[in-house]
Length: 146
Image (cartoon, rainbow, N blue to C red; front, side, top):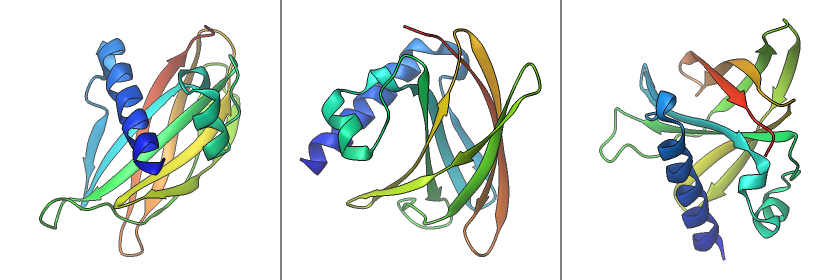
C-alpha cells in the first residue's frame, strides 16, 4: 500500500505541476538543500489517502508538501529536517503552520494543512533546519474552491 501512496502522491504532484504553469518547477536550491514544494487543495487526494495521512479533506483545506534533498551527496538523498513557518494572506492575516514528517521508504515528506477561502493567496515563509544549516523558503500560492 505504501508504494501505491507514494506513486499517487507523485502523480498528483505531476498533475499539479502541469496545471500550475506559473510555478511549474517548484524547486529551490538553498545551500546544501534542494527543496521541492507544492501547495494544493486537499480534495485532490482520495478519501483513503487523506485518511492514511490524517489530512482533512475539504473544499476549504489545502496541503503544503515539502521534501528536502541533499545536493552534496550522490543521488541527492532525502534529508531529515525540521520545518516551521507561517503563511500570510493579502489582508495581512497570519497562520502558523505545523509540519508532520512522513517517511515512505527512502522518501521523506513534510506535510502541513491550511484553511483558505476561494481565490485566497498565501505568502509562505518557512524555516528549514537540518542541524548544520538553516534556510528560508518563500513562495506564494493562490487557492481555489472546487
